[in-house]
Image: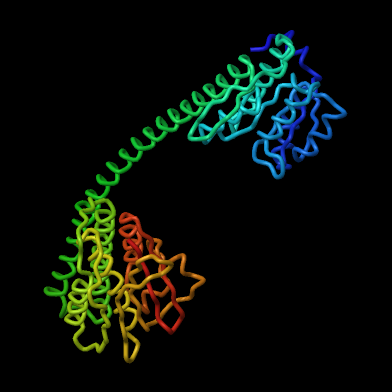
Length: 418
């Protein structure tokens, strides 16, 4: 760490920054300038070499990835210039490859700074290099040391001090990254614990909803039936209409509670994958839909031999929701058709449910998979707006994605991958 006296001595030193990114160059200029350094900026290696013919800075900071001459080659050329050999060169790198260290040694770099870097770390490295610059003997060209790494030959000409500084900076960067990973792990563990607490609270709330809310609803329904049976003949039609409305709305609320509880359970339950015959599953769902409304005439087109690997119970919920939606939104269509099958989209196996029903505006497609977001009023089509949100959660838990295409009056197509 530089002393206060050394800090004052370093103030005013000239540093050459070689960086093709204007944003990064200006950031370095700002940081160094406010700490008293004089900053020169070159946008590429060719410009930097031309500047070194006229000026000899106290330190050079160079990015590695640049057009034309990269940082390694630029450092090698700088170290080959007699009156520039002793100027410390710091390379900015991501250190994503062990060969970065070997290339740094080969070109004679003095230090690495790993991106992204903190201001404090950058200044510490610079002070270290500038303070120790005065303690170094004049460098002369050294005979090359040939080494082989990953099947390639490298010639190392750096002196012992350069090698030590470079390796220490690499080790320091590794320690810094490790500390960041430890902090991230600790933060993740804390968030996981908070999530576990939130899940326990949600389960407690679900239990409360299931028992404490349903109990008064059951009582209200019961009293409505009692009033109808015991007092029905004493009430006028308007009063009886009010009683029926109360009864119907409490039943609707009970159904909504059941839907929310099922949504919670389905999106948290354990996945048990197996090979499934989705064609048979879709046919069974189609039979059930027809039995519920035998008066409707709907043509089902179900692809043969459609299989998938996933949780049978969860994927059945997916098909029940998608086919059920298609059934619901084709109720006003003469010659209604619902199709289920599989296709290839972008070399990806993609399942689909398609209908020729009410459709929707594509501008509103992003609302489809959010809970309680409905594109049609309850007066047009019944529902709670939970079905497609359930589909999305299940598909995401299988590692896939789901999306929709539609046109008002011309039906909708829902696609999903697994």
